[in-house]
Length: 105
Image (cartoon, rainbow, N blue to C red; front, side, top):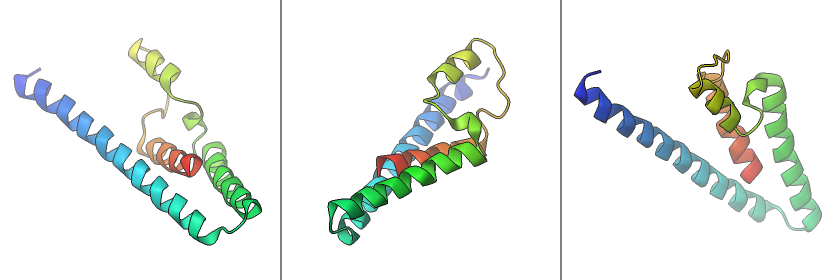
């Protein structure tokens, strides 16, 4: 592996993680602001939270079941040489991102 790749690849990965975190934080903030602006009572807030949970659960169950769970056991299995079909695909990444945002909001 060339020396340049050894330095550039970790930086690109770190930037990807940072951008993902930034998207999650800002999206969660705006969803929380949206829900507190619309929601007046505790019942309305509970219904909004339940709707976000249904969105997240539906995405995981119907779109990408491999995205269920925290991901740490899957990552450890991958690093040990086990191939899991579709674990690190773009669809799974987007589902995890949207489900995380919905669960936090």
